[in-house]
Image (cartoon, rainbow, N blue to C red; front, side):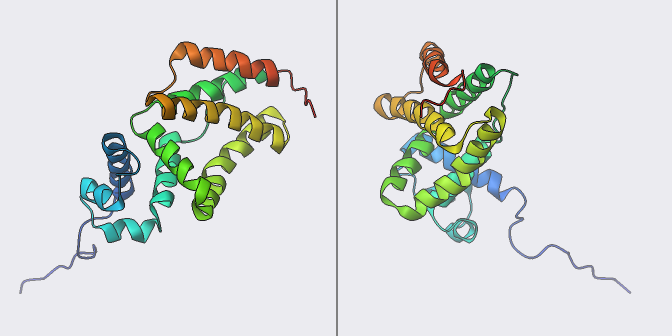
Length: 192
């Protein structure tokens, strides 16, 4: 008598690693085609998955991009003991991340979409900005409004450079940005 075994795996393509494949395809597509041309259809084709696979996980391109950015950024590596060291490490980290292929383009694109799309703005704020804001607030002992201003100055400057030149900020300019920002924030004095 021959025993027939049945697979515990459901029919269809294995799902392990789908997010990693989609995230890599997203950044690659955004890098190659630009944010506006990186449609969900094109991202799905580059990932080798069906468009429905993407929409089952992410309700919109904006939500996909935010999750992709969260994956690319990881947690903020706050290094150092002093306020100046912590802020300097955060600035260098975000500048390096924005300089990675596709990351700055994706960040600038979803940021631009958020200006006129409240749903994307909510996802971007709640899922991307808030975790980093809270980590910085805790590490620096600063109130929310000061940390938001720090984020605005740093990320705004870095994204502006990317948007205006298509290139990330060079190391010498990042160092100048650190010096400028530390002059305002490092002492912990709240001007308000």
